[in-house]
Image (cartoon, rainbow, N blue to C red; front, side):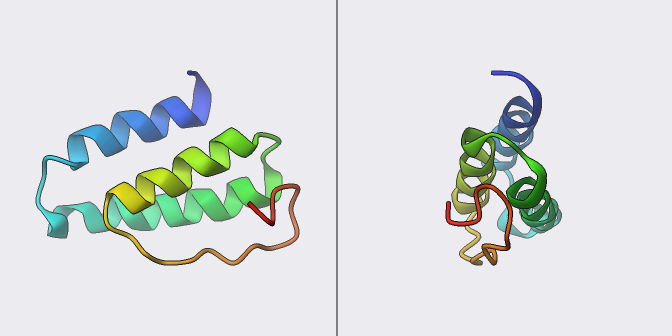
Length: 73
């Protein structure tokens, strides 16, 4: 796994062992990253990995679909 999915995985795994309050900045980063990916990324897997990482960290926020290639993912 290369690129963004590998980056997300490398950030989420260690955060799972930390305190919930310490995860907030990572969750916010992943929300922003997912928004960009939904508009600009050509890989459905990338969007799914980002969304899964947020959920694993306890984030239940829904990201607006937008109008990108995977806006319905």
